[in-house]
Length: 117
Image: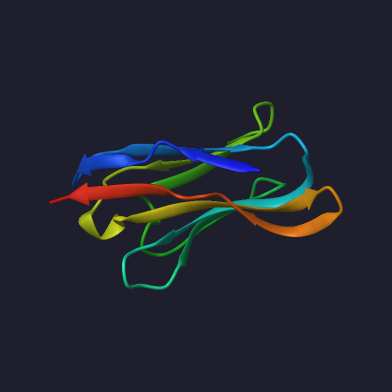
């Protein structure tokens, strides 16, 4: 349903842009977002964007990351600037919507982001 791309290895201070392509079978999308999970840590919310375009960010990424979406391409993005080693994690795209007869939260498979110091 969700296919992430754009992860990789980058030096501290660098930038990456993550993309999440949403299956065309999904509809009535209420919100989209990105979570991340670092080794040995709990999964945390990074950013969300609602169907109306309202955005929300965790304090740890505010001012550095930007979430956006392209409705025509059914894709959500996460632009990550001024990356820090503590941003290293697997990043997951999440969508709250309906696919088939199931309404709820859908998760991508995750993409690894590694920031070297």
